[in-house]
Amino acid sequence: KAGVTQTPRYLIKTRGQQVTLSCSPISGHRSVSWYQQTPGQGLQFLFEYFSETQRNKGNFPGRFSGRQFSNSRSEMNVSTLELGDSALYLCASSLSPQGARDYEQYFGPGTRLTVT
Amino acid sequence: DAKTTQPTSMDCAEGRAANLPCNHSTISGNEYVYWYRQIHSQGPQYIIHGLKNNETNEMASLIITEDRKSSTLILPHATLRDTAVYYCIVRVGTGGFKTIFGAGTRLFVKA
Image: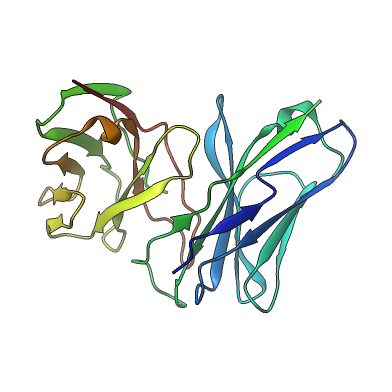
């Protein structure tokens, strides 16, 4: 079974621009979560989507948004990029039926975004 | 939200067991303990999880204390490829994922 895939793997953008990152979950997985990882802050939860609805949200500004499509693929968008947005953005998928707590997440390789 | 406390770093000799502790003293009764690891520049990898009982799979064993306030991840025969950052996580939220990762433990396996 193919794993979680993320595109692109590397990206360089300029301050003020916007960016869209894509995540394809493992086949059959309906939950997709996004994380930001930086050396200073570590792994931080951005948001989770389940059946095209945002189910959980972390503490990030409104410049960070996401969506999920009917095939469970997900995108996240960052508008008005800042230097501090340079990070590894990770996507994770899970079966996660409603109400379940004991399902593991499978992470993709990440997209490394550099903002100059 | 339950939080976890882990040592910043640990060393282990190759071939020996690596025992990684985690404190989660505020864990709720229905929250699970999960362990992930992250090898440099890769996405985190799921290792194991448990609720009350000890668990074992092909990668590791998880020992949870009776009061559930702490746990230990055991890699029975550590190899150089086990060098990574290990995260102990307690599942939070009423549904779905809002996983909070701490700083983790950086495990160095030495030849």
